[in-house]
Length: 625
Image (cartoon, rainbow, N blue to C red; front, side):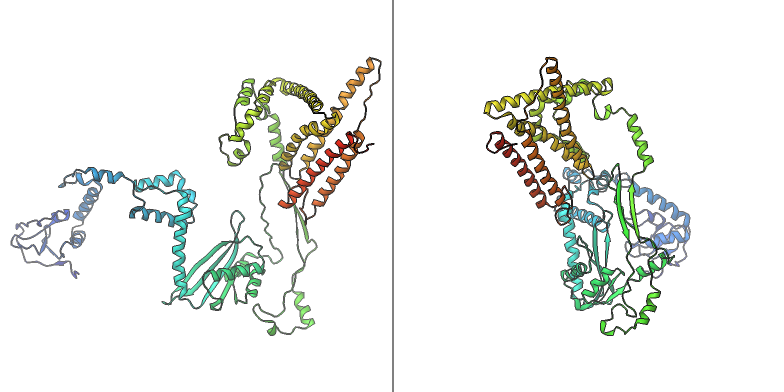
C-alpha cells in the first residue's frame, strides 16, 4: 500500500535523458522513465517535471494520478487516446499483430452452446429469475424483441421452449427458493404473520401469507410464503382452515405465532377468532379509511361490472342495505366473554343513539342498458350498408367456388381468431353434401333485384324438394308396408324437426333468455301447418270446385294424434316449469349435468311414446277417436 505517491528526487540536469521502462507496453509509460544509472528501474521519474512517483510492481494507478494532478492537459490527451484505442480491434492497435483464427476456434465461436454448458445454464437461470422476479408472462420469450435481444447479447445461446420454463426451470427455481426459506424457518422459534385476500385483474380470488421473524443474527426478515388461488367462499371458516393448512405446509407451529395482522374485514376477524390467534389490526388500512372517508354522511359502495361485450344490454341487479347491527358495547376485540363488562339497558340505549341508521331509501335497483344513441347510429350504418356484401354473395362464380371448396368449421375459427385447416369430419360432410351445395349454387346471388331473385328461386327450390321428399317418403312407406300416417309421423316429421332442433339450439345460445328458440319452433310449425296444409287444401278446393265436385279430406287418425300430441306437450311444459326451481336446475335450459341428461332422456322417451301410440292406433291395435 502506497502512503504517498510522490517523493522529491535528487537535483538533475534538465538535459539528462530518461530511459523508457523495459518491456513497457502501456501508453502511460510514454510520460515516465528511469535514470540510466538505475539499472533495476526502481525509481520512476516524470519526464515533464522530473518528480519521483512511487509505484508498486505492475501498478500504474499512481502514474495516472500524477498526470491528473500536475499535468491535466497530458492526462486528458492520454485518456482520449486510451478510449479510442479500446474501441478498435486488437489487430488495428499500434504495436499489435493479427493472429489467424484456427478452424476449430472459428467453429467454436458460431456453434451453439451445449445444454450442459455452464454458459447456457447461466443464461437460462437468469431468464427464469427474470420471469419469476419481475412476474413477466412466459409468452414474452416468444416475442421478436426478446429473441433479438438474446441474439445480440450472445449468438451461441439457443432459447429453450416455453414448456421448459413453465414445467422445469421455474419449478426448479421455486424448489430452490422454498428450500432456502425452509432452512431459515427451522431456526425460528417465534414469528408473526400477515394475510390478505385480493382479486386479480380477471376477478380471480387469491390469498397471500407473509411471515416476519428475527434470525439468529438479530436481523428482521420477511418472507412471502404463499400467494395461492382461493376459489372457496370467503367465509371465516374457510379462511381459518386455509391459513392453518398454509402454516402446517411450511412446518410452522401455531404456538410460535405471536400475532397475525389483517384488515378489519369481518371474515378475517372471524378467522382469527376461530383459530384463537391474537390479531393485530393493519395500521395502513385504518389510516387509509381515515383519509379516504371525508364525509361521514356519505359512503361509496364499489360494484364491479363485468363487460360481456353484448350488442344489446339489459342487466338488472338490486343493492339493498340492511339495518346496522351493534356488535358489542365496551368490549374490545380479543377480550374473552369472561372479561366482558356488564352493560345495563340504559347504557346500551345511549350507545345506540350514536350508531348509524338507515335513511329513507334502503333499496336500489341498478339497470344497465346500451346507449340508445350509439346503438341507433350503428343500426343506421348497417341499414345503409349493402348487406349482400356481409351475408350474401356477389356472383355465381363465388357461389360455385364456395360449394366445391372444403372449408373448416366456423366455431373454432371465431374463438381463436386464426384460420385452421379442415378436419377429417369436414371432408366427410363435404362429400356427403356436395350435391346439395352445387344444386343450391344455382340460386341467384343476393345482389340481383335487391335479393328478390334469391328469395323467389330459393322458395321455389324448397317447395320442389318438399314435394319430392313427400313422394319419396310415401313410396318408401309403401315399399316396407307402412301406412301414410305412420310414415308421416316417423320419417317426414323427423326430417323437418331435426333442422328445427339445431336452429333452436343456435337461437338459444345466442339469445339471453332463449325466447328466440321458442319462436323459431313455433314459427316453423305454424308455417308447416297454416301454409303447408292451408295453401295446398285451398288450391285443391278451388280445383275441385271448378270441376263441380266437393273437396273432402278423410280425417283418419288426426284427432287421436293431435290429442296425444297436446297431452305430451302439457307434460313437457310441466317438466320445464319444474326445472325452474333453484334446487333442480334453476332454468328451462342447462343446469347440472345429471339434470340435463335426465331431461333429455325423458323428452326422447316422450317422442318414442308418441310414435308408438300413434302407430298402434293407425293399425287399430288401440281404439282411436
